[in-house]
Amino acid sequence: MAHEHLDDVKRYLLDLQERLCDGIADADGKAAFQEDSWNREAGGGGRSRVVENGAVFEKGGVNYSHVYGDTLPPSATAARPELAGRSFHAVGVSWVLHPENPHVPTSHGNVRFFIAEKAGETPVWWFGGGFDLTPFYPVLEDVCHWHRVAKAACEPFGEDVYPRYKAWCDDYFYLKHRDETRGVGGLFFDDVNDGGFDDCFAFLRAVGDSFLDAYLPIVERRRDTPYGQRERDFQLYRRGRYVEFNLVWDRGTLFGLQSGGRTESILMSMPPLARWEYAYAPEEASAEAELEAYLVPRDWLSPAPFQPQESE
Image 1 (spheres, rainbow, N blue to C red):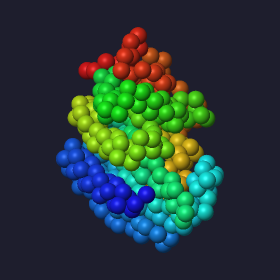
Image 2: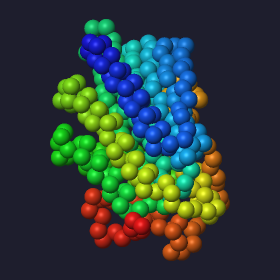
Image 3: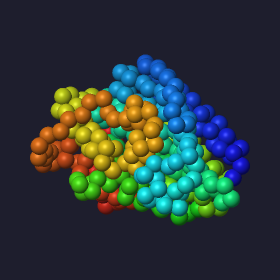
Image 4: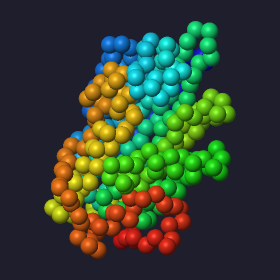
């Protein structure tokens, strides 16, 4: 594969980082992103942008990275032994947003491109990415909106694309040790290379370009919802699940650390505060207890007879 394809992807990702930061900063209305660049000794580097203590976002980040080298980390070759002995490039943008108000969901997303090459052999390449939503006090209207935007982004690429990648998201963001999903899902895809580079790249762009449309209307609806210490404590408790997933199950975290990426940028996804409580159980029929009904995979486009909290 000619490297102009890699350059095309890099240009898109850098532009996406700009647009995400602009949209998020406008939605927050107070804090601006701070930027710092970093270099990887073995090859590559990145541009990290972080926002803290804003009017909406307690912490957030939108990171661009491009790492490359002659040897892949064990986490990659263990799953794909055919990649052993190949040089590689991995380029992507990842983002995570931790709002302060417990009624505004946390959200995460990333889009990425990988290519591995070896002289005399056909390059191995694919796209991956997606986005997911983690509410603490979920509202059905918000969850349905999130999934409708996800479906609309997938529709031009086939009727089976949204249900397939929605199911993959439910499966990937599943905390096996807790027997629950991390949130209400969204899209997750990896190893996408069927149909040729142009179609696959177009799909990646459709997903990346749809995130703000999916997330910012929810932020606007919930940002001024009143809350107290009880809601804050529950948010911090549920943030613990977020930490558990990222440190125990997330493949991207493992790849980043094993490939010599910048630890500070990789762990940017962690919330600024979290808490754990032994054998916690919410009060029966409480607002906190309603979350449990959302932490199982289900059809959010036609959620009946599921009847949790409606929009206020």
